Image (cartoon, rainbow, N blue to C red; front, top):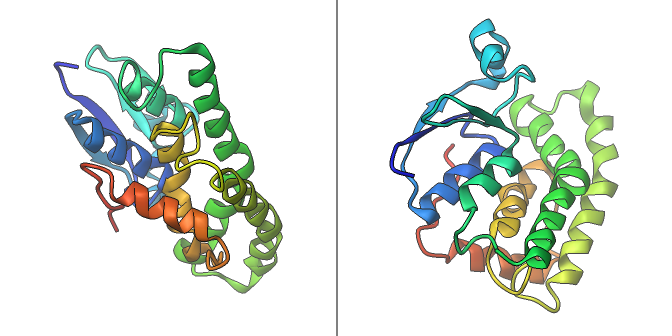
Length: 203
């Protein structure tokens, strides 16, 4: 990439943080455009013209094309790099964990965090948060079991599969998930935080 991409996102979002972390570690230059989702900035006509789904993150390529969905953007950024794989099975295995993150992990852990951290945990949403606990802990159990045998989630090496799941796992406590009973996940979180060019989530 010789020209800078543009990334539109809310830095408090784990889905947006994935891209900040991947770009830092891959040393990809980019222009960051902060979009406050709480103010309705993703529902404006201008933003909807770029992404009709009205969500961040969103990537704009130098040629004017747009790409939405955090894990699709991660896959684009990591193409032909050490964070991906040219092997068909290994590439599919990375995607397996990224699909797991969006289907079995993010809908529980990220949503609980959003209600508590950004909505202030209102009384009328407490039942919603509690309803997320079982699914969130089930996802953490799956990860803990996998990490009994491997240092990283896919193909025994650090990849965008780890980035995808790190984003919301490392702030799961903000959704009132207790990671105290997950020693292997905690070791994995420390391994990722120790990767070269790691950057923290912006607050």
